Amino acid sequence: MPTFTHFMAHAPIDEQTVARFAPTVPAEVVSAWREHGSGYVSDGYFRFVDPGHAAQMLEGTMNLPEGSTVLFTTALGDLVVHLGGRYLLVKFRWGVIDVTPVGTGFPDLLRLMEDPAARDLSFEWSPYLEAGQRTGVPSMDEVLGFVPMLAMGGAPVADNLRRMGLWEHLAIIAQMAGVPTVRGDLRTPQTDRPVPSPVPVERSRLSPALEPLAARGESLFRQLATKTGQGMSDPLTFVPVDDGVAVVRAVRGGGTIFVGPDQTVLYSGSSLTFEDGVRAFRSGMRTAPEKF
Figure (cartoon, helix red, strand yellow):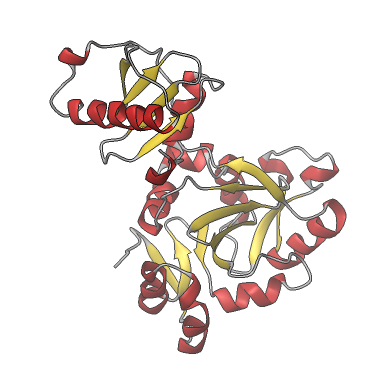
């Protein structure tokens, strides 16, 4: 059962609402609705909301895809929405939607919310701390909104933040600047850290933990070669990456197979750089086994 490190309850979420949205969200979310109700998470920047209330208040402002459920709002007017196993950060102030890496679970999301580095990089919250000292923590249906709004040329500084109605502010942004659109994958401290230059290691020098991963990558390359009617006499290169191994086949039609400690893999074609492949693997992208 998920727990918030710090939580201040606002109101219970009725069982009818829980039953309505339970089929579209992870079980941990349903448990949290029943255990905590709606309320303020940590220092109040994140608010765990009543999904029925959020859906009602967004009507006429933004048509979220079928199956979407608003889980959190922020004091700067962002929404955290669950859809089909992924979490969307809908940032009205910037007009963008960032999508969490594949495989991000509800506990992972909570850890991101409490990670100071993620608050800056992922949630872009930096003006809130300074402004909040002046305005106080906004209530559940309030927000610190930029005046003038960013889409109209306003500067993203604390002095431009004003306390106002959350849902009215989002409606005005949508009317004046349009609804947010997908920007791409959410940047996190995990995915955004530097990618070291690839340093090949002889197969015999790989650690006992990495050897099975290297063997899996080699086996998959042999499967690909057999499927395409090719031989595979060319040598492979093995590069330790994070807690896994990149198996590189540097021939025409080759590429790189990244193998994680759980033996899930990502095939990266030779047209992609090694750095791009590492970042894609860190973001949670994987290649299904039947593709080999």
